[in-house]
Image (tube, rainbow, N blue to C red; front, side, top):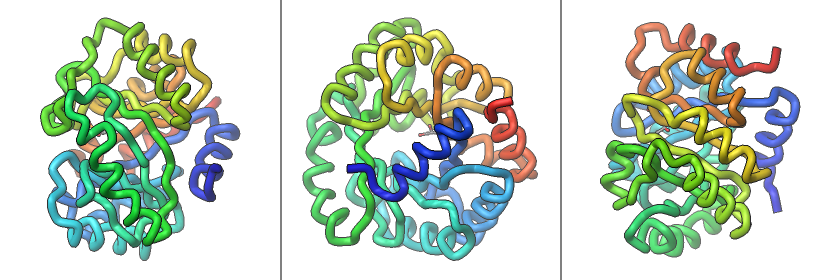
Length: 249
Ligand code: 1GP
């Protein structure tokens, strides 16, 4: 059953066609910086803030960043966990995700089993999502022991996404890896769009409004950016560029 945050996302996707999310890595951003970026993001029309990173080891850091963001903005905070250490009780929701192309069962179902009782006890809304790593996969691919999908094989991504949908996952995430040189190809997004009805999340290596717009035109519903927001001096301006590029005109 879809919860409050999921309904909110679906509603915004239905109204706006595609939405933007900022990813904040609690190992990079201090709580006050995270709050500042989140405030700018909300002002520019970003739909939600995701908190997570491939190597998060201390839940205290996740807690501090999530708390600071919650105090600063009204848009939901969704956890994007690398492991059980990514679960903060202060978040609204969690991408309850399985790294479908991992070669290690821990990242497919092991961490999920360990984390599920905490998600329930804290009352965090789980949103089931299939996660697929493409290309080099950067740190996420290495840590998650992924066998990354070749960039030039859109039909493989389509088959993974279809399997995710058939397994009951309600979102699919095509991940090029944080800081990837290139985002997932438009051709791949188009093939996945043809194959599935569930919303498609695309992230990794997206740096410009133009790239985001093209991915949305190919069929992406949620565009996630992290690195580019960390690297520019005017985060508000960059977020504004991304949000306005993907809004339905
Ligand atoms: C990483 O897809 C996200 O998991 C965002 O990637 O940091 O490259 O924007 P970037």
